Image (tube, rainbow, N blue to C red):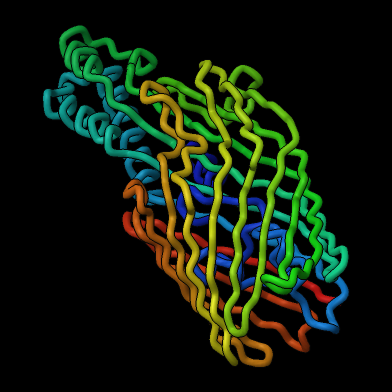
Length: 396
């Protein structure tokens, strides 16, 4: 059981419930912003950004990874404590040492650990992507290959276990496989191959603006593993009986415009609704989402404000199903200070739906000679919510 929860932590460890393929460390450090404030190197956030570049920029390649987990230390400790309590009680029942017989105190010790499972939950997200981008005003392009996972581990105490444990004191028989308290590992993985295309236009009434589109091939994989707490085993996660998958095409659409020191962005993600059923028959849906942003840049200082325009209910399942995500509508703010080869970033994320705690982000970018780039970011929230992002890039 120890190994199973550690594996879940690694599998399901990106802002709360806002993972997006291409959500890079630059964005993560500045409050997961970038729809309006970014440039062509962040096209997956807004494909229209492919038209924003410097004259010396020809090509950019990047590799990024990020992860965030919540309540993981308490969850791992509680599962370990429960495992140890089950083992101690089973050993004492089996031994039936007349000099040290099992007592009600031993039963109560196990029951306390089992009851604590109701407050034990592990939540996390992770993101990995590889991208190549070629900016242009006439026909810019990019290619992104990546994916993200959102998942959790949930543990529930069943009051029938109290009868089983206390009867063991009388009968001298205790079979931990009969415990009805259980653990559930629930996750969905979104994998994508996206082609980013953009072009700048000019109209007399509004001047220059850019439109970008990202057609993509998308695959959803669901993982739902449920087991008695004594038999919970990470080796079973990827057995066929716990997995389901579905593939299809999807589309992102973006808009970008600058006006003096101001930048404006508007993006629609996953405009084609994509649904899949997990192995227990619950429908999991990736829904269209929309976000708008305004940014201001002058000299070394930049600031941005972004907001989801609708509540996102992607991966929210029925109330009687193992929970995956809750509805959310995020507002994100970010700041960036840029010197020649150094960027300092900070940001803040809040949920208007009040289902997720606020998140504070910090980031550092190093870009020697504007050729190689290293970007790092960290995220901090309540209940031991911690995250980290790393991105390497090469500009030609």
